[in-house]
Image (cartoon, rainbow over all chains, first blue to last red; front, side):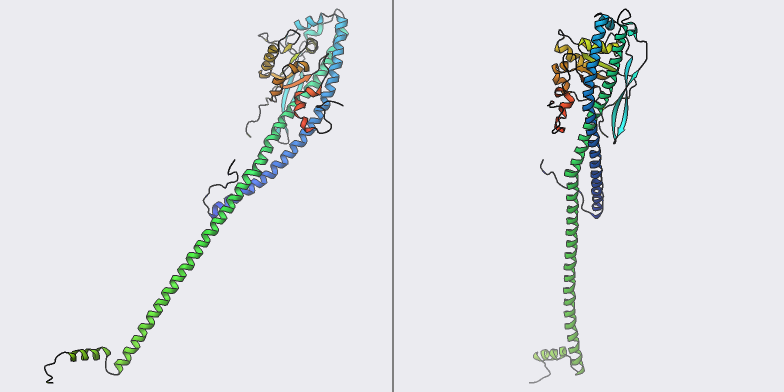
Length: 262
Length: 130
């Protein structure tokens, strides 16, 4: 992906700088929290995994015992109980209830098995022969169901936790590798722009000062010259002639005056 | 939070079974079987005459039915539809692989355990016992 750590397009003002800084703080805090959550979830995950492994082993054993019990029942009560049982299926008396549990912030499902206690049509199975074996077989299978339900709830929470861990890790990585660098780049860009503006202002100010200085100097120069001329005029007046008048008389004398004979 | 998987809090959900005859009979004896008004059952008995297609259809039906919370499936049956079982990743209903009389439990083929094989380093249950 090109331009992965670009900056956000913002107007480089001081306000935006504050806003982006606040966002960076938020992102950092969120990143730390999510990392903690991911760690907690992983701990739970491993615990559940261990329980699953041990429960699966025990489940294998329990199923074996139940199969034995069934074989015994078949042997004693005759092979026909299969058909009797198949015929007698009506409503399930063993059902499963699902609840939600909140573990480290993740909703995990939990199964509990409930015996609805309705009339078991199978109570009369094996009445002719082998009733005790049938009852024993039933008890063995009920115990197997208990273990299986627990295993099922462990497995579902395992899968849900897996998903949750993946999502959280994805968010952590996104924050760490995309959001934070972007915000940091934006902050440095805004700072750079602000510095440049400040330098422009400073430069402009300096230039204007320079102009003003030169203006002032020019004015002082002209004021000085004017002042010198004034002083010279005054001196001339004191001596009774004005430089100007003297010049006028000379030029007038250059013209022909009729009063003068020669 | 976006797209959390639906975990319904139901009060009465059934346990479905796809297994060989003896296992199913045993569980029916315990009272897990259910036949509803339309003669739809929550179990499928797999014998030598059942086709893979039937098993697939039953599996798909059980996993899409709303009132089934757990699906018990014999391991050798699961091996027949391994691709379906492995690609299934919804948390509910839960798929459990159970051993049958002729095929004892083999953790190497369990779909859930094989998925987390990478988590185990040395003491790997899913990679077979030594």
